[in-house]
Amino acid sequence: MALQKLFYISLFLLVCTAKEINPEAEALLRWKSSLIRANSLSSWSISSPMCSWFGVTCDTAGHVTELRLPIVGLHGTLHALYSPVLQNLTMLDLSTNNLGGVVPANISLFRTLTVLNLSSNNLVGAIPYQLSKLPMIIKLDLGNNNLTNPEYAKFSPMSTLKLLSLANNNLSGTFPQFILNCTHARMRFLDLSGNAFTGPLPDSLPEIVPRLRYLNLSINIFSGSIPCSLSRLQKLEILTL
Image (cartoon, rainbow, N blue to C red; front, side, top):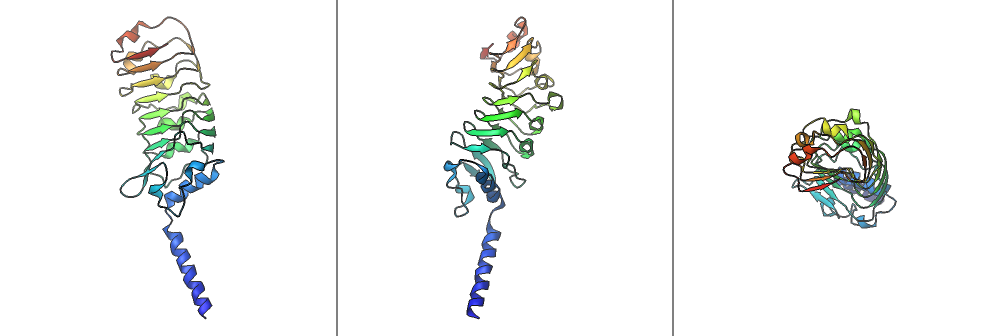
């Protein structure tokens, strides 16, 4: 009888402990377990509070709001990163790691993202057009990967952007139409360098990006003359063609 009682007490404690596991922590641990190498995430454990984990920032309610993990030697993919419980995530910075594979379209379901930085990895495949549907995105940096053309026709206007970098990928075709489809009044930084874009430079940039401060279109295959209209970019500080 004593052994049976002890068994039920142990079972009760186990169930209670299981119920206390934060679903957001579970989601992050699931992604960690999918990585090939994640030595820098040794603090990510159910034995320590999630909000104390390396690279994790929480709000006052204990929800994950930021994942800042640049230059920490992560090796693997992003396929297991998305979870519907991470609905307060505003910043995702996984730049300068060794992450490969495609950029999952379901990253666009992090609806509160304002910063997405996946630059300087080994990501391949087409840029998912779904990223253009992030309603609050301010900074999108996919530079220094091996990404290819998205389905531009499916891109939505990204009028909230302040910074866009698609530099040093495998993009081609004419100047990206999704940039020209609406006025990006907030955009300050645009880097399309190191690709294979062709054709003339658009005359309409002063109307499309009137507050631009940095523009880098170098190392492409643009043709024709430099538009005189660029002189109307009155806020421009750095221009590299």
